[in-house]
Image 1 (tube, protein in one colour):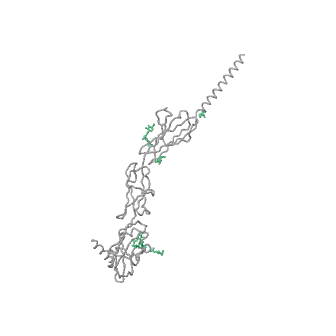
Image 2: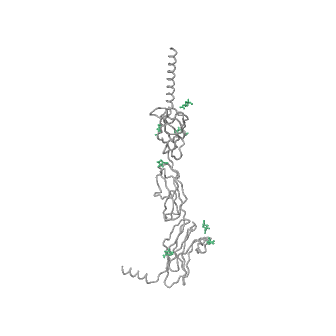
Image 3: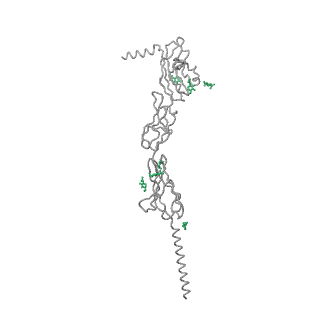
Length: 325
Ligand SMILES: *[C@@H]1O[C@H](CO)[C@@H](O)[C@H](O)[C@H]1NC(C)=O
Ligand SMILES: *[C@@H]1O[C@H](CO)[C@@H](O)[C@H](O)[C@H]1NC(C)=O
Ligand SMILES: *[C@@H]1O[C@H](CO)[C@@H](O)[C@H](O)[C@H]1NC(C)=O
Ligand SMILES: *[C@@H]1O[C@H](CO)[C@@H](O)[C@H](O)[C@H]1NC(C)=O
Ligand SMILES: *[C@@H]1O[C@H](CO)[C@@H](O)[C@H](O)[C@H]1NC(C)=O
Ligand SMILES: *[C@@H]1O[C@H](CO)[C@@H](O)[C@H](O)[C@H]1NC(C)=O
Ligand SMILES: *[C@@H]1O[C@H](CO)[C@@H](O)[C@H](O)[C@H]1NC(C)=O
């Protein structure tokens, strides 16, 4: 056995090589606009001298299958570059790939005795990855599937959301998954597919009340309460509840619409306020907001009126006493 192996190795080393052309990757996949390099080596018996090399592309011309030299193809003139030599390297580069560059490519070389071409060929696939998202509009928790298609047989693909790599092309939609997705052929991530959009719908979240003025509100001042929320689709139905009119405990509806306007604060307006934001997927209440009315002005008035009355009474009494005298 070992003797046989040694003999084989010796044979390879001593006996002149046969005609062959070998490609590193006979089925390369490249994306449109990128470049590809066919790594290629060729061999021939000792004593042959290579005079000329060229690459050709298999083409169907008026129903006939022919091989056209790349140098004779106008569309290849500035894009194909021979990287090989007249010894054993037959590598070829093609730049700015177009989808119609897809096809069979053959390496030929002429020696002083024979012209030869490779029976084996490179089949180049030029693809534009194409992204789809199923379904395009979902509710929180629904399953989303991303699908990337290429015309390459052996290519694997990767996904990006807003330019960041995502691990799994099938997932349960969360609020933050809304956005644009694009895919690429693995190893050629610089060329992305056209983006596809995913819209995740959800009931109102983060509902809050914004008051035009905070702290103690003076009597007769106006106040505006605005209900803010994150929702998709946007909340379109708002209900305001307050404990002010009903007293502590239960809350009563006091208005609707995104804005609650109280033109003139009175003591009975003081209390807790909440808003309920609603879209067709559901509703959510805000946290409570407390409105208080500054009644010191009112009290001062009453106090002043009181003092005035007392002074008047004292004066009147004094006058009555003087008169009685
Ligand atoms: C190739 O490039 C040369 C010089 O840049 C230009 O003059 C020529 O038109 C180009 N040919 C093709 C087919 O694009
Ligand atoms: C052939 O030449 C190219 C370009 O110079 C080089 O990248 C490649 O490694 C060479 N291939 C072989 C098999 O020597
Ligand atoms: C290949 O496609 C490109 C761009 O779409 C076009 O300019 C070119 O003429 C096409 N070449 C052939 C041989 O059809
Ligand atoms: C809700 O608020 C939290 C905390 O502020 C924030 O991280 C989240 O993005 C908000 N949600 C939406 C849908 O805006
Ligand atoms: C509030 O308005 C009413 C009616 O306009 C008025 O009688 C009252 O004096 C005002 N109170 C204060 C504290 O301004
Ligand atoms: C708002 O929602 C309530 C409760 O579902 C409903 O009764 C009311 O008709 C809705 N209003 C609008 C304007 O859609
Ligand atoms: C929101 O508040 C109203 C009034 O207190 C109440 O009837 C309702 O059940 C609350 N909704 C939720 C989702 O808590």
